[in-house]
Image 1: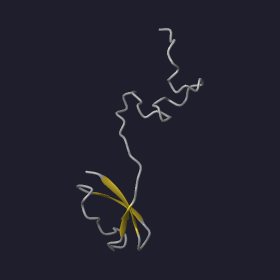
Image 2 (image 1 turned 30 degrees about the vertical axis):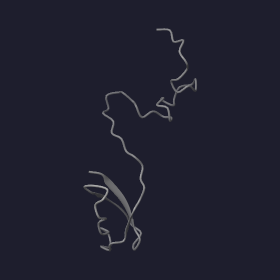
Image 3 (image 1 turned 90 degrees about the vertical axis):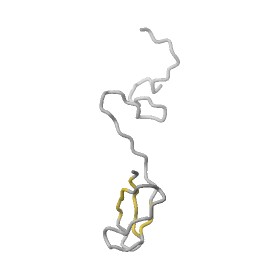
Image 4 (image 1 turned 120 degrees about the vertical axis):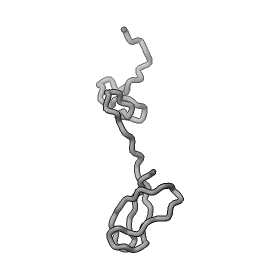
Amino acid sequence: MPIYEYRCDECGQRSSALLPSYASPDPACPHCGKPALRRLVSTFATVSSGDGDDFGGGDDFGGDGGDDEGGGGFDGGDDDY
């Protein structure tokens, strides 16, 4: 079930709600009780297993963003193993 973020047009407070689907009716504001919530566009969240595989990266291409060579892990080969 997705979590949706809202802002109330009446009191201005932000809140979130766990709804069964996108088509579910918007709830009333938990702060003022009025049916004036406007659904917000929020960022996408991911969950990490914590096992050391970092697929989130520091840049748009999955690199770690911290190497001094500026390649983000895509240096074209020639690695000596």
